[in-house]
Length: 208
Image (cartoon, rainbow, N blue to C red; front, side, top):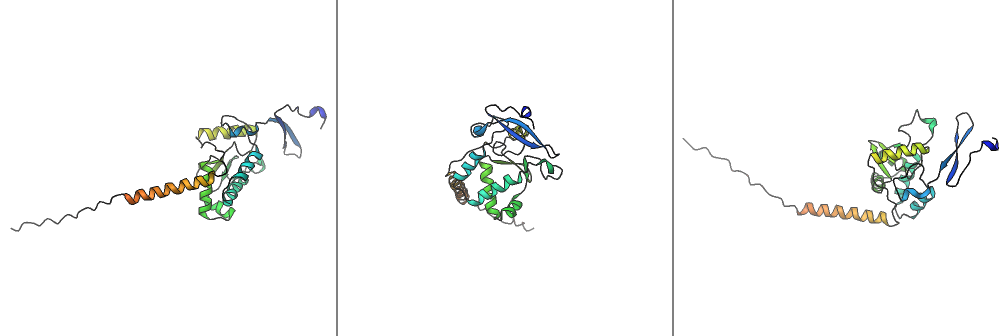
């Protein structure tokens, strides 16, 4: 490639290389928005900072099973166009379910279910339809900038949960809050008064 064919990279931009499908490379320039995703869901395009996400995951005091589930979900979000014809779900989405994740992670149903509920609670994923999940497009890059904007629009139009960047002890607090809710619900059920209905006595027919 000649020097005059190289793209011009300005501050706040980066060069990206993609295969042209014929053994060559196509170079392009895209804007970098870095950590903006943590502050706003209104921005569009590439907003992922993988180092920030890994820093958050590394700081969270959560069960290792949760980390396993998240890694498997991200790995399932295949971004290669080569398998578009055989893809189980559209690009940017993940086709899986609780049983599939159990097998992939070698975890119990309870562990996978709890991890899934937590990541949905903090807005890192949502259920698009039965058996298909969408990972938060502000957290995971799985396509071009244009595709990112499309997936972000889909997330917003579906009123996906607001994304949280939880502090280290938040998983423990979330667990404790869930346990307290369960105990409160159970206590409320026990306090419900049981009204015993009196059995009606059979009416005797008057003798002639």
